[in-house]
Structures are given as C-alpha cells and as structure tokens.
Length: 337
Image (cartoon, rainbow, N blue to C red; front, side, top):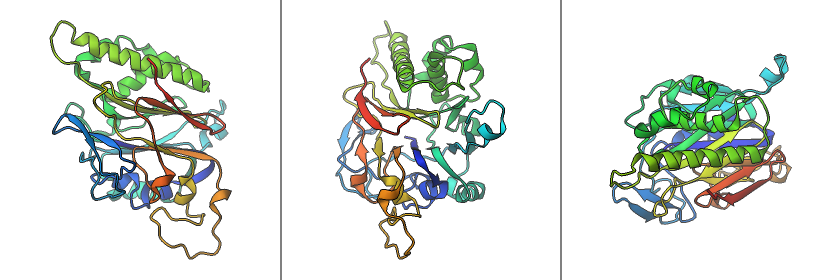
C-alpha cells in the first residue's frame, strides 16, 4: 500500500520537521510500519482480516507492503497568490521516482521550506501503472490537491466507462495512468470545472460521495452476468484547498479493513523543533523551547503516526470521513452511500 501524510494548520511547519527528520517520518515508511491501537489490516496472503499485536513497534508492523515507486509533495506558500493578479493560492508540487532519502534536491527543499498546508505521498504502484513522475501524487486541479492510498478494483476494466463520465476539463487535466488520477478527475467533475473557487466543505463532501457511488457502481456493473466475485476497492482519499481538508478511509467490502488512517490535533508541536518535545522521544536540552500549548491550531491526517506518542493519534473508523473546516475543527463522520 502507499502511504500519505497531510498537515493543515494556522502555524507554519518546516517540511524537514514533518517529512524527513522523525524516526518514523513518511520517507522512512518504505518497508517499516507503525500501526498502534489494534489496527486490523488486510493480509493479501490469506485474503482475510488480520489483527495486529497493537504494539507500537516499527520493526513488527503488520503492513508488509513495500513502497518504492516514487515520492511526491505538494505545499502552499502563498507566493503565487501574492504575485498573480487573481490572488489564488495554488500549490507547488515536487515529484521524483528516486528513493526520497537519496534525493538531495528533496532534502534541500525540505530544510528550507515552511508551509501551513502540505501533502506528501509515498507510492507503491500497481503492475499496470509505470514508475514515472506523472504517476506520483499529489495531483493538482487548480487550487486543490488530491491523494489516495489503496486501489480501485479491476480499474483497467472500468477505465473507459469512467472516462466517459468526466468533464472535458477534468479529462484534459489527466497526465498519468493511475487509477488515483482518474478518480481525482471524477471527483473534480462532480465538484465542477472552476477549481480556483473555494467551495464549502459540504460541497466537497457531496462530490466525494458522488465519486464513491460512481466508482462502486462501475465496478459492480462491470461484472454483471459474469458470475464472478465483485472486486474490492480500498479508497483512502484526501483533498484540500489549503484552508480546509476532507479525507476518507473506505473499503468496499465489509470483511476487509481499509488501509490504516490516523489523525492528530496535537502532534504538530511534537514534530516542530521550536517546541519542547521531540518526535522520537529524545530529551530536549535547549532552554528557548516553546511550550506545546503555544502551538497554533492544526490537524494532521496520515496513514501512520510519525511521533513516538501513540496517544497523540486517533485511528479513523472504517468507512468514515475526516472533515476539517476552515476553523480547523475536525470531526469524523460515517459515510452513508
């Protein structure tokens, strides 16, 4: 499975602090995993649910997939809004197919860039999509970014009917071959073709529901009269416009848990070197540290926790929304289709 990380807050965070430095940052989730709170995962070798030990252990994580097919980050600086006449805050995106810890350009960029909203994605590609930069997440539609962990069941069989549902603008914004980018285009078709508009969170939520319904219907219709089992889909989507965020953790089959997804409203200070904690639990000796309560309001949504404090993170319930509004208030809601 892929891995993704999203931060949105009123206080800037240094990319190096949240993406690179922690012992279990996203760039190190290539083949070691940290899944606390008795997360149930899908075991592809046995086609059944499997319960983890619940131990906060990087070396004994239950997710044995390896993520080696590319890395991407997208973040907002406000520079485009400042210099362009339309004053729209569009994201900057960096993608590469090299292992992220060996990417000196990425390391330099992260050590000198801060942002109030960042998406990062570590890709485990399917056998039907190439390892090329255009297939790396996040995908950009105007002011919005979109990422995914999981897959659409039997995507190659439903690709043509899915394409027929897209608006011309959404179709022309597809540059790669992944199921994710096509799902994103479907989402933005439902959202409408003006991707520079700040839509209310309820509109984003409605577009996401319509996207899920379309995907599940297409998969179901494809096997009609074929006397075969409906292919399952894992759909952990996330979208942002830099001011609000909507994510889902979803499995199309009840017997299969979706990929892991957590959220935190306190880990931002643990990850920020200006504050009095450390993501790996190391002792801080500096006397100029700020207290954790001084950190600005924020929400992190991620495939795995990236700090040593397991109690900073809440496991998102299966088949649920994570909704972060412009006031940075976060709620989880059951998805009803």
